[in-house]
Amino acid sequence: MVLIKNGRVIDPETKFDQITDVILDGNKIQKIGEVKETAGYEQVINADGCIVSPGLIDVHVHFRDPGFTYKEDLQTGAAAAAAGGFTTVVCMANTKPVVDSVDILQDIQKRCEQLPIKVLQAGAVSKGFQGKELTDMDAMYKAGAPGFTDDGIPLMDEDFVRKAMKKVKELDVPISLHEEDPAYIKQQGVNQGKVSEQLNYGGASYLAEAVMVKRDCQLALETGAAVDIQHISSAQAVEYVKEAKKNGANVVAEASPHHFTLTEEAVLKYGTLARMNPPLRTEEDRQRIIQGLQEGTIEIIATDHAPHSKEEKEKDLASAPSGITGLETSLGLGVTELVDKGYLSMMELLTKMTVNPAKLYHLEQGRLQEGKPADLVIFNPKEEWMVTEYKSKASNSPFTGWKLKGKVKYTICDGKIVNL
Image (tube, rainbow, N blue to C red; front, side):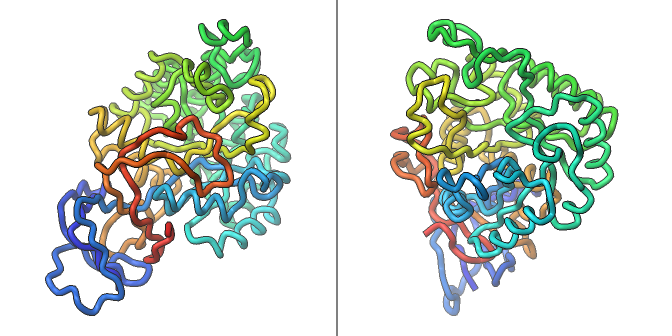
């Protein structure tokens, strides 16, 4: 039995928010409420000045395992997640081989059983990520795939996407979509605009995202599927999602911390560390993403944790891979850039990092309630910390050296401290 004393206990689902105590019994939350007698507990955690919240959930991470374990593997990815306050993550399917069969899925799941946090593995939508033939979604769903995605590659064939959406609707799981039409991309990773012009770099237009989001919002409305628009980056795409939701489509959008924190100008300062797909865009786009978070158009914050080796990121802008390692800075950026600046309340931030992602994937986690899983994060929202080192194998982040607020003290999964 673990006793957590005097924390500001927040449960985003019920909007519970008060200073009180929490008792964990094994892998469940036994009691929330004042405890006078502290004797007889295996461990007493003093959470004075800290927030006690459901463990964070990230529905968009790359652990690179199998096939690219020089960038990250299941163990280092899980360690990075635990360091960042995450107790559940969903891995994308763009491994090598691609997760397009039950055998590959089960191999990963078996290895995930030993990890300190809950690592779920999404299945691929198309065989070999070719965008032509559906995987055996029924079989993969039965084997435990929580959802499907070809993240990293856009699905260009409209009829194929419609067919995939009908199938996920039948299975009642989400499909997560990477929205970039290559027709509007001269060179990946940098917004087509004043910075790309300055660098004499082709860039990727916001239209690459917008046209795909518009199409898929329409298909979501038509099929009734649960559709997750990944790493939304442009004002126009936010507008299309808002309109689709108003019309009754079951569409959610994710915003990544780098898209609500940085603009295309970051490429001039950080070089390849600010190269992303979709790219960092204008200040107007960034502000619309923040507004989307405020109004509920964007319901989820997800990192798109994309570790790469130092050697890869040291290549020139055109040759380096896109993406950043994000799990360890996500909460800090949320507190510093959204809560501290008055854009979101702490309750709103945590809603987008716990219960909303849990609902998308029909998970029991993401709630701090009696009888629910003992998956929690305890963090000090006022404590400043410097981003210096990473539990991830990778350190490809523009946020190295930044001072952030919101220091993770304890990440607890199934009643055990996992971030020490």
